[in-house]
Figure 1 (spheres, rainbow, N blue to C red):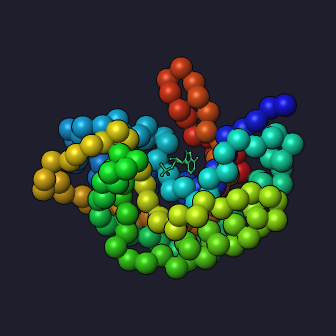
Figure 2 (cartoon, helix red, strand yellow; figure 1 turned 90 degrees about the vertical axis):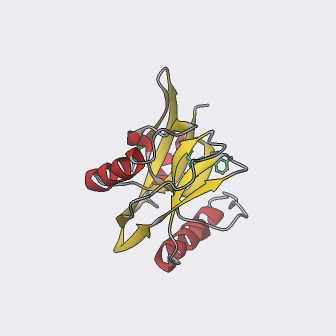
Length: 165
Ligand code: 3AM
């Protein structure tokens, strides 16, 4: 029985990825481990280990959405998971509606939603315990136009996220 570790995500286009990288470069040196540039994303729904036979049905839930923009305009250090994140000071009702709609369909497929409220964020670095005061973050405007199904794989070089659909 083969399992895939899966999640749904907003996946950046190359321009957005480059903007995230450039904004993050202004934060170095950081105390933690920067997320691989190719792995930067917004998690929409985490599924965990899923049997291969279910991939097709899940992939059918990914796809285009009417475009909207989230301005990632602030930095937050989340102390418990020790992650440095880019978040938005504005509510993101469109993103929340997508997450709710997706979970309604996932619920019917037997997946259980994380009870924590959805906060759109980009994890920039892990194992961060503190940040220098006065760190400046440049706002990244991210236009979302699709939801991707992503597989988390582990290779010698570390964790790698691969969009499947
Ligand atoms: O987007 P971020 O970095 O917040 O932390 C993991 C990452 O989130 C999260 O799924 C994203 C892609 O790996 N994740 C990992 N295990 C998880 C779990 N058991 C989890 N989220 C919820 N429950």
